[in-house]
Length: 347
Image 1 (cartoon, rainbow, N blue to C red):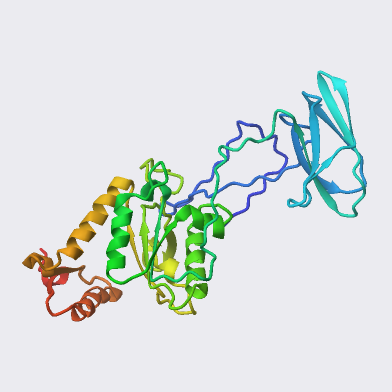
Image 2 (spheres, rainbow, N blue to C red):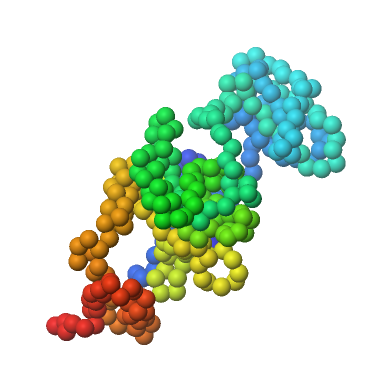
């Protein structure tokens, strides 16, 4: 739930503390964010001021430490224009005056000093991907992160090549996708799990038929995106969290492939290798390859372990039922080994 608290008549400073307390022992309160709305002084702060106002006025702004000022009309973010008819006066502390043409609407301006432009952390060359190309036609989509799937020179890691070869040798067509390309094409470069779902939905609906059947995510994720618990987990391929009636918020990758129709059934098979490094991914891929290429070479490799919790709530009867359904689908050569807690007497 969201709560709004109005604080009026207060002289707020940088040392102001806002306290939110629960009145019962059982309740908990976690702050998502605090939003403060207040009238801003019409003066520059650190040689910068952004403001909006109805057109038809002349503006006078004080408290600049430099005469090297520029004014931009940012009313339309995709059509920014510099305001050139400005007057600057003063010595030591400077004032700026300008009167833009009347537009008949509310205009937004930013005034900024020459030394206060934002500098990007990095400028990286991007090679456009072909993810939106409707000519794509694959059975198997493998999504991973740059740090896991490619070395510093851009060459594909050995584990990735080996895993792709394994799937192609079984008759599947495979497409390897860098998760950064998904962000670039489907979320304006912003890392978000929603972009992965949008991409898979697009591929399912628009790529050549038959639609992709399998998705593999290679890369660990965390619900703690901001690393509040200081565990250092890197969000290589972000997961999505959903709210469930009996478990609260939980992570699910099925969200990415439940994309067609109003039903809750997945439209592609999905799995994840939660690797935190290229070495992790290589170890996992090696185990998969060793198992699949040497299947049934030893008797233990025919064993399938099925484990289920006991029933303490009515809905938990489904635990054993799911395993029994799975056991019925196993090939005759496989041996199900069942470990159901309900079969044991607990003191």
